[in-house]
Image (cartoon, rainbow, N blue to C red; front, side, top):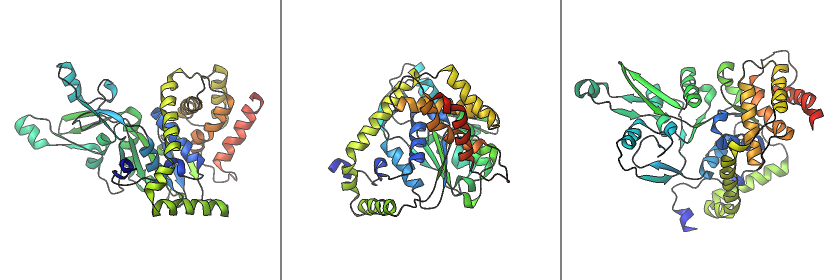
Length: 351
């Protein structure tokens, strides 16, 4: 108990969250395979979007980072290592590491490009010939989660930078002919309320998954959620203690899935079916096909399976495709429902 109380701010346990299964699954799959490309969560106000995102970050196992490094560099993986650490390794210097919580970075709506990307001290570079870089939020988010609340209200230019960094895993800052590049591999999570405006389709398409959440209508479930939250607010540490076993079990499941992911296979016939669904739905580009394959593998690994089956694809495909359909003002059905109808037609006979 004392160990729990040493922490600065208690976080609501992920396994204590009632309902919103679609959002929880999308976050878990992105943590298992960050290459899925992040998740956009759209839903009503007060449905627990921020609470759930902070809870998944708190649940994750600690990561080993190089001590004193601003970029949370890995001590042996060059893809998530800063240049300064690479130089130390090449020079044969001793690398000291420490374990730390997975970084959870919030991007405020009023953030500037310099705050996001970092800045180069031009004066020092010109006068002393030293590259001095002040890391931004993209540096701090390396190997963690970067959360943008109300992403649909964020400046499009900043959204572009975020999505480019999330896709490439690197951030490049250039000022007056001086260039600095550092690793920036993170799970991008955006949330928003559709009443406050939609993201541009070309930006929305860059998010790997899209979860839609609605206010719970069932009275008994609403009471259960309110009671759970009230119990946490009254005594957060007792609530955290109560869910310790479930939290540990889920954490272990995620770690095992991350290890198993590279061994999971997906049959050629099933891959063809995924692409057939994307074709019928007129999904532009191939991102939909790629993300669905990745997500299905991550879900199979989460279920501790060696091979993806039809049910795995059915479980994730709506999350991967609903935001990629072309908007038709005359369409009477929801895009998610449209995806489900086509999936049933194509995969129904495969079960």
